[in-house]
Length: 481
Ligand code: NAP
Figure 1 (spheres, rainbow, N blue to C red):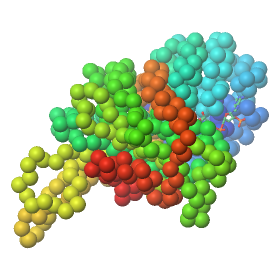
Figure 2 (cartoon, rainbow, N blue to C red):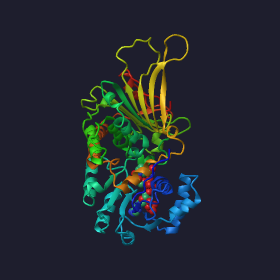
Figure 3 (cartoon, rainbow, N blue to C red):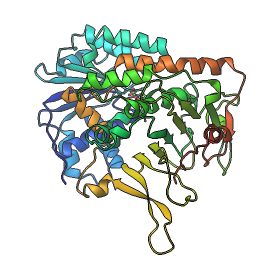
Figure 4 (cartoon, rainbow, N blue to C red):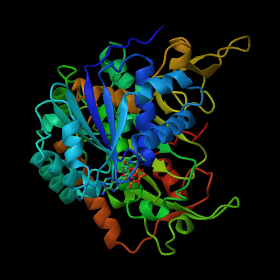
């Protein structure tokens, strides 16, 4: 099956932070991929903007190397053709340099997208400058990277500052998890099939586990990370978005505000987290590697690089079905998934099965995006009626054929920006509601003298996190299992 590519309208995409890590590693290679599949029209232009005083040629040479690094089998001719769409302007976001050049460069009759892949302290100054320079036309959009604030007050202030320059319909707050194929498939699975929705409630679902595990530590960016911690860096955005898509009511239409209204209702239905329902951790030294505190260059750090929590969505659908969220660094494997674990049949007519785990729907985000349904069947062969569990597996790459190209999350999201589709972007009130729920947890931790629990690198997190499940007679799924 060949992916269906619908070219977008001509655009000027101004990428602030174009020399930075994210732009060179993800955004620009992503745009190159969209170019090679024919989604970028001939009249599309990408204007790189950053502080460095680079010539256009120097920027393009560096970009060519970045594309090859990200996509080793990229064809040289394709890169050359793509680079014809790319220019560079040296702009100081806080000063005067480059702004007049940018204003002269932009075309009046095409879509304008300003992508802010810069530190969050520059979001508001750049937006204000775009406004005062008269660049915020009706067809303009602004894209902001995470983090969107570090608490409710800062997110509210940033929303207000952006709101003075752009309407809500022009603001695209990126959470790249929402651009993942499987995450959108979760919506297709739930709302395009009659099979699951009748079971999608506390009567049939025992619990839901959402895991985002990373095998790497924070070495090299520990000082930055230490100011944030896993709750702010991962839970407030990525894990909460996955929770929302799993728990939300069916929207009346697949339209940006209909979907976001339902997600917002989920966040607002979350119970406050009791101190006993959350565990934070830090990896210790081991396997020849340093500890989190070494990597953070802060021997007294109390920031968490692991969080596990039990969350309750307080509404009719989910009363009595907890959601367990877990994320951490330096764990056994890199793995992101949502596991929807179903209740056992009310009455079993078969002999008890050892190590029975029951029906579960596993939505894998990485690695190998796909969906697995764990079923109980008869163990084949003689020996009476013995049962066993097998996965019904749908790895997209296999199921849809090898020639289907699943776009990277950034590719899809950038094209959505150009199309003007905000469905997969967070609305301002959603972000604020998420901070409103997170802030009391941060406050509790700040007031507590307790330290994050240490855990072994390469494991599954602190013992207390395992206990969070065991005390409810449940167990986490194996990380990397
Ligand atoms: P980075 O590597 O430090 O790059 C920062 C970029 O901002 C550089 O291009 C830099 O230009 C530019 N810049 C800094 N000050 C400027 C100024 N006064 N005027 C104009 N340009 C200026 O950062 P990054 O890792 O790419 O991250 C960018 C944003 O994405 C951040 O908000 C980050 O939180 C977010 N993010 C990053 C990742 C990631 O994997 N890297 C993932 C998710 C979100 P010069 O180098 O030319 O000075």
